[in-house]
Length: 240
Image (tube, rainbow, N blue to C red; front, side):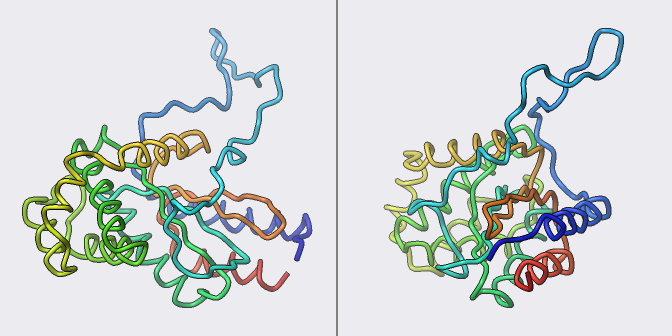
């Protein structure tokens, strides 16, 4: 199935309109590298052709956590922060997407803890989610993530001393192994790779998502888009 150019333009227009209405993101401190500004204040294009940053997205591999279709027509890669309130909202949206379109859509969760906004906690939570997966696989990762976002208030107000033991008890973790995994930062390299890839693909804040279309095109999805906007996109792609 190959999308025609007009369809791709329409989809991009739908998302731009949605982004104007729903620009709910937590902004990182990463500078934009898209354009240059001269000393007189005028903006100029870089002299060399610039690679589309979306092409920097890392391919989905066995280290990723996949929810939904194993043979998707559409893949949505989300870069997210467990302390971001807009990510919490978008997490619920994506659960609805998978419930409705799980035969055709795959949701990939990648970490982007923005430590300038959520020092210590967001990164530790990302590590904890990976340690949950270390004990109980990808299903454990998603169960931990769902429960964590249900229980926590976001905006760096989470009491980790209460919520992590609660979830670990509910999920029957080996507590010693779980905390050893977190404290040793066993998955720090993975979290850092996810974070760097979010920046390399042009992300400016969380949630930041990239939609992989059947013809290989990639479309950015910025912020906590509502289910209506995401569903319109999916319906257009599936109908093409």
